[in-house]
Image 1 (cartoon, rainbow, N blue to C red):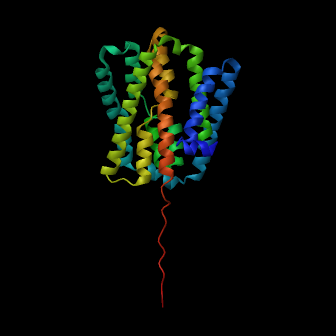
Image 2: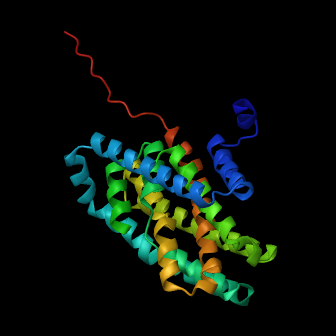
Image 3: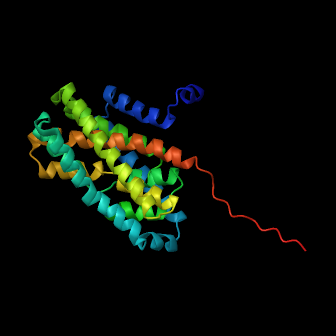
Length: 272
């Protein structure tokens, strides 16, 4: 199977994420099963936070917190660049987009970053994990398995709520396209900004993954509070789609970053 995926140039992890979406569409978690799934996801996240916390020294955490250039760039991307891009994209769509979906796209762009996948992908890509941990936490650890659980849990909730029946295929295609434009724009901006400003590759990884994320864990509860129950389903649909899209895009980027050569310290031979 792995040989076939390599021949087709498909990332096995992206295939696994898509498989979770398919499983959620056919067999969404409901009732007691959903409660158990939520407990498992939270337990996995808590365990991995503990593991990463135990591995990272207090000095490294402090270095991440005080890395003000990195933290400032991520913060500006999350709360300034994202809303500007979102407003531009929604304005560009004009009257072709349902008002609820347009509100949902802007809502996505105003949310904080997500801690779990930001740290996971930074770790997979061998980036600056302490800085990413601080950056994602300031604006709002999972490993690959827990990310798959999050994908399944999120799409299960959407299927159970009947969100898909409220959107026509052309409207769904337009939302997907606009989400792609937003995500691609932010990924390009964060990558270029990190390189122009002279950040290391490890810092660039943290900036790209933390700056391009939006938290569905924060967004769903906030949407339920801010918006009427009759419209909340449509409003959170762009967020759900963006969440899965950012996971798949960042999975590919993390694999690409991780394939870079390990940095080695040159040895000096002393001759008599």
